[in-house]
Length: 104
Image: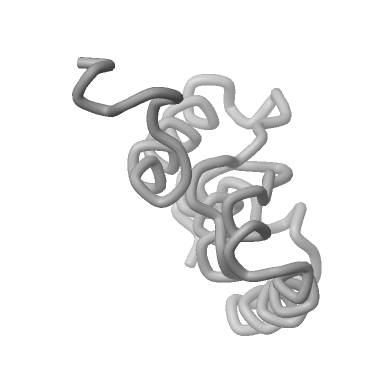
């Protein structure tokens, strides 16, 4: 299988859905008692928010930074504030695991 993937394996966007599912499952199994780092294809506020709502208490942005430049952080900051406000959260910590807890 590793020969089919190539040297270095998979990272970034191809891992996005699988990573989010794993975050959601770990959050469910631990009841949110452990910090979870969301990784895998985070290149926008929307993707970071998906990981947060699944249970990530912080996110690692690498691939997105490589492809979108350091301006990505400013865009993510503005975008996350907008998404949190839209969903009625006053902080990221309120949104952590919202999808698992069944909160809109």
